[in-house]
Amino acid sequence: MTTSSTSSDGIWPCPFRRFHCCPDGVVGNKRIARLISHLKRLHLSIDERKCVLREAISTDHGLYMAVEDTLKLFDQWLCGKCMTLHAVSRACHHPDGLVHFAEGSNDMSGYIVGISNPSNKESETKVTEGLVLDTELLDCAFKVPITTVKSIPHGCRLAFYQALITALYKVVAQPDSVDAWVRLLLFPRCTLQLCRPKNRHERWSGNRKSLQQSSILKSLATWGKDDRITMLVNSMLDGPGLESFGQGGGDFLEERTTGNIQGQIYV
Image (cartoon, rainbow, N blue to C red; front, side, top):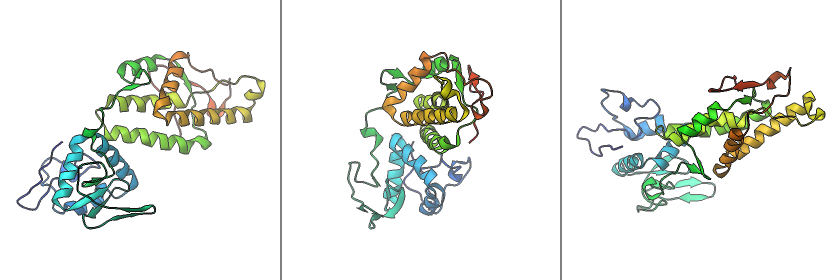
């Protein structure tokens, strides 16, 4: 991704034109007149958008260079910690101290402070502990009959929401990444499976609801660690689908799926 760093008429290309329905991304648009104000107002105005852009800048070398060229042109720098723009003469204030602009080449200097240039990183691999996150794996996963909950327990909804948002951010930041898409599509199948009661005591209504909630929270905690995702995926691939609690499960009625996710999830 490239962007021009000069303009004869004071109209500038936005480095984030493919994000947040930016008007500079519309065919026939005449670029942006007040670019820094535009960046602050549209792209860096709320935490959700800042998170998306932080992820994108850290993984897209072309975007990283486009943003850095733009900031250099306008004597601005971006704090990668809070995603706030500042004049090069100003520091960014944080509870744990000040962050200063310092022109240089490492990941704690230059016009984007605190985010490493992805060209200096090792290329991202699709292999997680021997598991290749590709379309072949996705095809195998969706052929396995999986029993999932129809409704997420109240005590799990916040954790599920946070994990889902993280997965979505990765897809938005890397829309061409097969790895990011595979993780997103596998996420509900790996974390919302209906767990199997081991005895009569666990089959009681109150106990099975508590057991189901604990199972989902444990799966979400495991999913949040990249080096342990393979545990959930392998568990799903190795089993024929977890059994339900039996008839009359309320929110935990089974939804056996093969080929696609059919159960509704109410969040």
